[in-house]
Length: 75
Image 1 (spheres, helix red, strand yellow):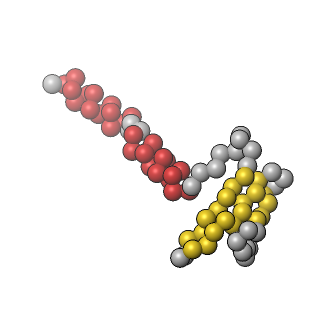
Image 2 (cartoon, one colour):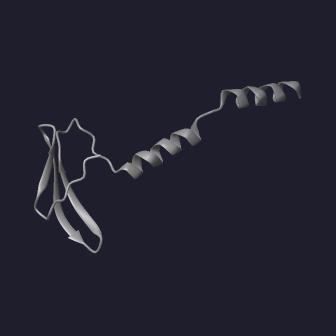
Image 3 (tube, helix red, strand yellow):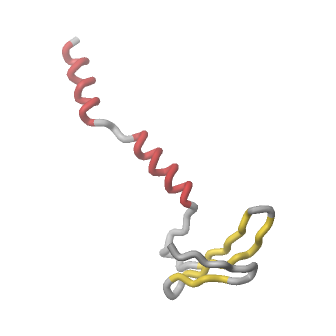
């Protein structure tokens, strides 16, 4: 992991076309501005984690479904 120190107004560049700029630092929070091409998805990590958990919760366990089907057929 690369660790950098930046001040308000300063930026870092990732690759050739992604810029992350420090916009504001206030009360323990940092406001970042991200400039990236439209084909690059920029999301907060916690949103991706929530999406992954939702997909996992919504997935069907085929073995459990098969057991339920067999149980219903036997009735």
